[in-house]
Length: 333
Image (cartoon, rainbow, N blue to C red):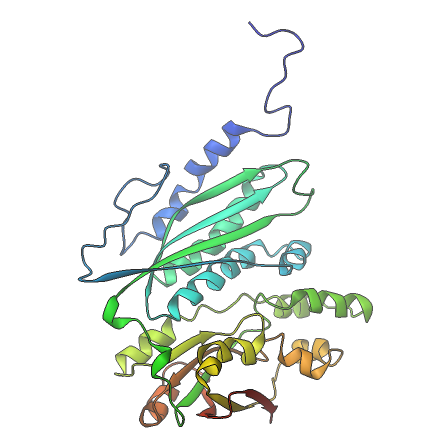
């Protein structure tokens, strides 16, 4: 028998029974991500398993990322589903750059107190994207941390696992001068640079209408269709890039600068009124080094494949060619 002064975990702010019941509550959402791929064991166990026997020479690809300080604005404007989509896209897109298939995804949600509706909405956004790219929600962790995670806040991290035949992995070492850079549009700033966005909104006292806020906070696009379309067109890219923090110079440069190659990029002016409302207050060079500037995905292809690549997804544009300058310059045209 407990003494009258005995304390409980629930009194300390953690309800383990509520957390356990959440796993059952999201079962329908999880099943949506197992239409074509299946786990090799049951969901909700201590670890998830996937059978790779369909691959002849499988290589595992992994990625880990979060949503960053965009979360503050997503919570402010009650866009929890967008947070879930951002979390998936920031991780799955990175896996896709290698030429791999995304097969499993895990999430970490840190909260001050379990609120089932809040968590379910985040996971609903995740499953929308995971179902679209045929990736299984394999599990995760919901950590109730009163006193560590501030009231009204949420911590999010995601972990994507992909697989590819060894021979299908892209090799940036094959990039050569004359190769063509093709880029596809972003929906907005995606989930990068929001510390600067938030600073500008606050310091410049910029007021956003509800419609403007939703436009500013559109989810990161999921770029699974572009690699699939390139493959269907018989194009093997030399490399692909997800344009995140660091913008075009850093995300493209990491693939070829150390090999003595470079590019002079000519990118179109970003026709996005809400983005421009922010960008007009940012240092121009810093903005290029921070934001995607309206381009969220890029592929480097052989010159002979450039025209075919432009037909692989809406809005594709040639933004430059590889050269031997060993630097990346960006010109807005």
